[in-house]
View (cartoon, rainbow, N blue to C red):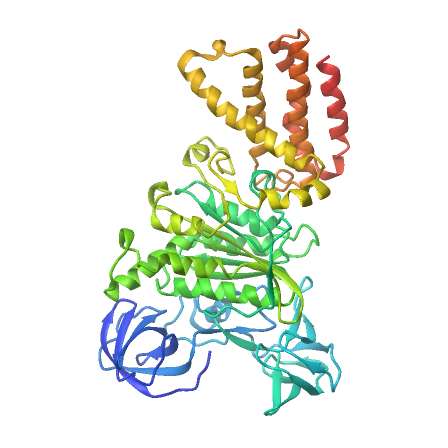
Length: 582
């Protein structure tokens, strides 16, 4: 955030988070400004002649006409460099722990805190020599930021030249660690760079996503997978488990870095994240999960305008790490609250409202956000991916409302949360007959190779049985269960096993909370194998009641609780299926 002050304007109107200032002909759209005598942070969102409409990211109570507005001459930007990991920021990248030290429990208005710690020294290890020619995105050195993340110091976009001098050893983020000779002279390079949040970071090439983001959640990985570099949305009514799904993905997905944006959700939910994440450990390394996580907290009781900033702050930080070659997952909870902030600001600007009062540009703003995802080759030639998973909170669970529909147009994975499933204690409450993934066919080759050769066939067969169950349930409601053939009744029992023994997953169980791809394949294979063998036994004269009463069904039901170290047990269960259904 630039601190260079420019000419001053004067406030002529205050309407909640919207402030209108005159005498601002020198300003530009999206310039960051300081409003009033307290210096509240704001951003210009409309210009009319010399009048600027400013959305203020802090409470405006007490601000009145006649007070000054000072432009900084720069757009709202984030600081990118060592120190991002393990930090909890507010919507405009102010570290909440530092604010708490300065102002106590509540954020004091107008408080200014550097986003990156200016006093902490980092051990800079150079990776290029003097006289090396470097271009945008090239790595000039590394800093071991946490035990899990090696922070790569890159040449900023738009700069190239020859390294004249390079530092080795401890340095502050603001210290010069290298000088670069360019056509216009010598340019100093620090470990920190700034980037406007509304401008996507550049890259060389966007590639087609071909690998799944493994989440450990069976209904997602098996039935509705999301690709690394893909987009997904999780709409659902209140209490259906959106936040828990987001938490599970943040904890267990195989992304190397998580950026979690709590955008306008209830404060107690964000508190759960802030209290729980520091206690969690990364399952692959055993290190604290916070060592690969950036949290951005902008809860429902914080200024409404800052919700928009929090979304862009999160995605910009994620793009920065993507450029280093990491796999990033952004969790946005929830984009509906961001859209509501857009609606409020649009109303105060007296813009022509669109459907349900949302601004006419809602769809384009949602698309701009999700399109910043992708599997890309960065400027430095490294491949990285950025996956965006956004929760949507439609009022009353109405999926036809504008925010959900705008999201569905751009997100390629739809996990539909159902209140009916949540009320029956089936979690994750993702409804299998309404959800979809447009990545499934593209990811089948990878999953067939790395999880099990019949992965795609098993998924298709399981979906066929679940769809058949829905058809048969209608018949049962009309004429009763006894009207069905033994084969159809076996279909109902198999579908029930898929629902209860496979799709149902306990996020708070030590083993069941995460299931590897291989274990998912073996679990589903057991259920389908029982169905196939039982069907053959029925045709050979075995009664349905006897087929359904075999003890091995208990083993199938409890397979979800088998640790990964006991995978050999699945072979024994397959043998028992064949023996008991002879």
